[in-house]
Amino acid sequence: MQRALKQQRGGRLADAAACYREVLALAPNTHDALHMLGAIELRHGNFSEAKELIVAALVLRTPYPDIEHNLRMVEDLERAARVAAGRTPGATEELCEPALPILADLVLHPAVVPRGNRQLPADPAGGAVSSIHLIAGVLESSDGGDWLFHRLAALLAPYRPTLWTTAPGPRRQPVGPEVRRLAPDTGEIPHEGCHVFVGIDIDCLEWIDRADAERVIVFCQPAAPSLYLDQLRAIARDGARRIELVFPSQAMASRFGAGHAVLPPPIELEPALTDRCREDVPVEARVGIPAVGLIGRHWCATSPSADAEFLCRVAAASGTLGIYDPGPLRYALGREAAVRFHSRGPGALPRFIERVGCLLHTAGKWWLEGDGREVFVAMAAGVPVLCPRASIFAEYIDHDVDGLLYDERDDVLELLAALRRAPARAVELGRAARIKIETLVEPLRIASVVRQLLIREGLHSEPAGSGSPREVAVAK
Image 1 (cartoon, helix red, strand yellow):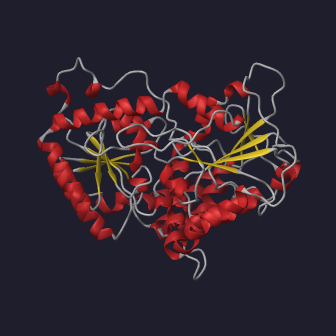
Image 2 (cartoon, rainbow, N blue to C red):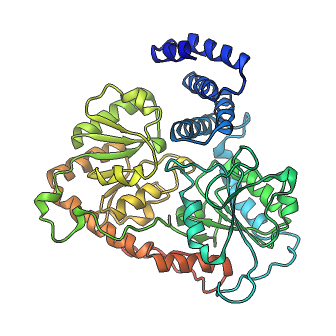
Image 3 (tube, rainbow, N blue to C red):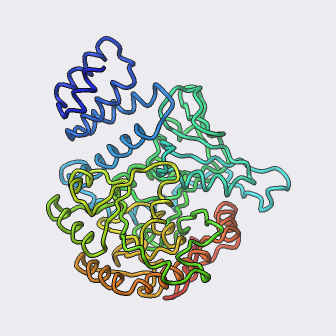
């Protein structure tokens, strides 16, 4: 192990990999050897083998940020490669996307009427409560995609939901506070009641038939259309079970047809405004933040050279460029003095956003865009967001009122240059963004909408006009 680590630090990856394999031949359950060999395979682009090794290491000890970060990175790169190449020849994501409204229509109007379908009571303090099961895939502890799971768990706390994860690991090893590990082979699965899936990437084929849910609600997050085709069919048992879909924006919901529920990213709103938005802080004390921030994990890549050139121009136009969770961008821009990298970790995203003058959001294919959390966190912190008009989250921004919208990359450079010339304008945009987010994710409002989604009371559909906060929920 000492020899392998020394070789890895020296960049002799092939020699280090050989040493790690020697270790594993002698002691197959050596956690660090599995993890480090997985990291090397990740660098070589062998995503499947890297994931297998990292997951094997994850099972052997308590999770920690580095291994979770590497697992998330390999999943991101694996997904990007799958989308780029198509899951099978001739079955690209672009071909799968038009099938989503057809599938949703079959799922939402099953041929067989589900049994039971009982209502949940409006008052959690009264009478018997039909059970609620909140279900997620792999949970992270390093500020990852499980934030929505924990947020919904908090909002549903009055109903005492049972929390489940399909994360791999020893069956009896605790996953987190009050979270149960799903184990179909021993019958440890959610039974009856209302099943709430958080995300679509949840392995349910082994147990979905036995779960016998009365209602199924899926909080949909951006994912490949081909994955949606597979997973919605599995959850709905090819149309035999009715399921209800909830999306983070109208734009994403429209990809699946009409009439779905919409809940904007329900971030937990901090009680105090940041200094940049406070009325009692002089403007001159708030405008000296020239940096632009970028979330590397959601970067829409074109080619390494073109990406590096554009981001260097962004850094030049803004003064500095901060990249949170940089992933492969670290290798492309590691030598650039004006580019700073920030690692993902517990509570790190809000701290990163607090330190930038504006957030550059990027969008390519909607299924690779992310869950919109960083957009809402930035707006809530009074940080103006530069968002593509093609983004599924652009509907939450009114151009030049509470943020900025753009079409092409060159537009970004012009907008950044304008903000740098008039930094007080960034403060005005940020203040307006904060006001809008305060309305959208006001705690009582969000809690009410989540309750309505579960008990089907009081939902209504109303188009959102320009310049006003969008409706939080839309009834089917």
